[in-house]
Length: 166
Image 1: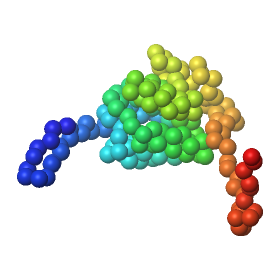
Image 2 (image 1 turned 90 degrees about the horizontal axis):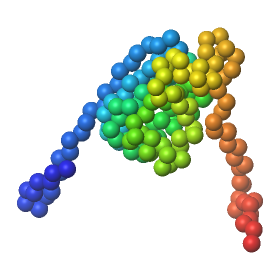
Image 3 (image 1 turned 90 degrees about the vertical axis):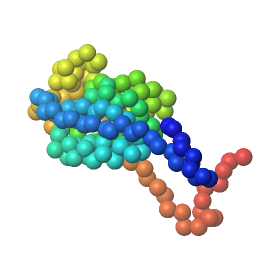
Image 4 (image 1 turned 30 degrees about the vertical axis):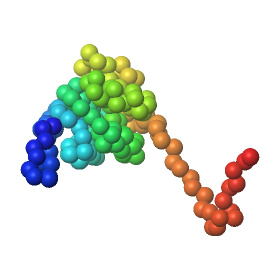
């Protein structure tokens, strides 16, 4: 990130790698191929594509091998998309991921929340290897909820709040 000084002001220029998303229909759903950096600037683009395809696809596969960088905003998009897929009764599967994506998922402990495809297997075959239902069976066997619904108890006043134990 080169910085140029103009008097007292410092102007910083950044080389932003664009996010490229291509879509391919496969026998068992839709595959999204993602290339580039997933950061604060590009996360909304990924979110919009994921949401658009989650509504129409029963199973959405992500190929993230072309992702060179991912920060917390990219992680947020993946987790929110997984939750939306769960609510819609769809499946979001990370078919393949780059080391940049794996590093973020492993460091944050979010990796177990995502169904993962086999690294060297065709996405339509990976569904069978993961034990995910296909075709007519998919309608009967929806994915289990990954996040339980939260039940909040209304607290009328401070005196009703639970006291910490000593």
